[in-house]
Image (cartoon, rainbow, N blue to C red; front, side):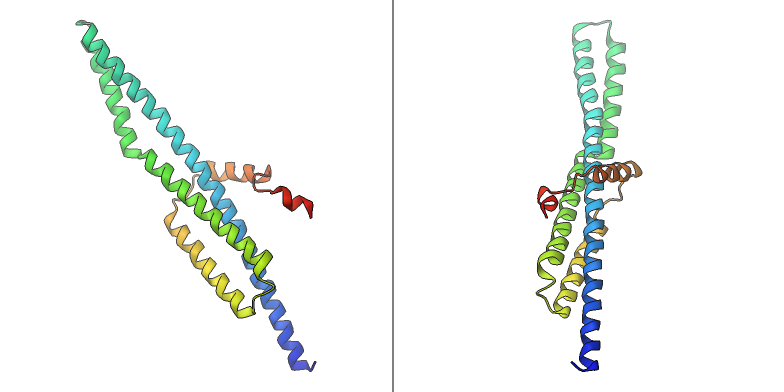
Amino acid sequence: MDSQDTAGHDGDTRRRRAIEAELRRIEESAMYSAQCQFEETKRWRAVHLLLGVPATLLAAIAGTTALVESTGRTAAGILALISSGLGAVLTTVNAPQRVAQASASANAYLEIQTASRQHREIDLDRWTADEAREALAALTARRDDQNAKAEVPSRRAYRKAQANLRSGTQRYAVDGET
């Protein structure tokens, strides 16, 4: 090998290492983003239940009170107002839509994470440097597109996601076998 071939090979090796490192970054970023979005899904489900169940129960109690007791009109009115207030908050927050959006975002991030890992572990050695760069660019665009669609998670969701990941929620048994 002459010095020009060696320089070309070294450049290709450095480029592959840089692509591998960037694939690892995308994989890690997607892993954290997915966990954050799953935490947001849990939060919005809880909000929906915490507002929806009392609103429904209070509406039922108010209706029953109004029908059963003629002297309970004031209580029925108060319960109906509270119920409608909870319903208004529930409608404004739109928790079911937020649950669906956070869940879809989480799953999209998991897909990006998986694709990044597979590119790095399976495909990278077989690709030319240019093919690897094209795959990285496509995955980066996919991640950027998902980042634009996803709502920013709360600090609480981020902290909970970090704790989940530290406890091993993303570890696979097969990874411990090698």
